[in-house]
Amino acid sequence: MTVGTQQLLASVVSKPKLSSVDARFMGVIWDCFTTWLAEQLHAKLPVRCLGLGEFTLRRDTIGPMEFFNPMFVLSEGFAHRFQLHDRRPKPAALGSASAARATDVDIAKVTQMVTEKLGEVVLRETVEHALRDAIERIGDFCSDERAHGIVTIDLLLGKLVCENRSVELHFLSQDERARALDAKKKANAKASARTVNWGGAGGAGDELGIIGAGARPGTALSDA
Image (cartoon, rainbow, N blue to C red; front, side, top):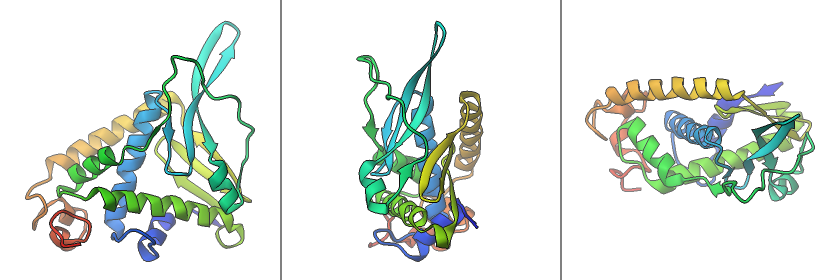
């Protein structure tokens, strides 16, 4: 049995802890989040990911040549809470004085991306709560191998895979990440060009199959 990204997001929608979003809204939030994350790693900027772990860099050498490659370090707290462990031993992360320090996920930026893609003003806490629920659900899925088997989550920059409570991240190559980001930007540009009537009937929310987008909880036009 294999559980993927769609099952993860559907579980967040059907059994939320903090969030209150529908399936299409959750899909847009996840898409924007993974796009932002991939952009940071492609720019060699480490990120602390909402308690899940750290997307960072390692220094590899082949003879006189030096390379900086992405790596994922599972949070000890997250691993302990869900009884998980990293599948691969980790070399020392990039630690030179010139290296960028890891930063937290820029929820404000991700919220802006979601707002632009949906064509309606989305609340920051709506995005943060949805993402935190998704990270929590990753832990739930990975910790119960009998119920979920192999867990495979798409992150645009690669895939997070968990089997027998053992977690690793399969990164795309630098060229593959660049192509994926370029394709995503082109797709988002087309979606933005179709966006009209922010938050009202006929807006991007309806184009994405979200009924009553203008009054959905979590947007600036709602009372929630």
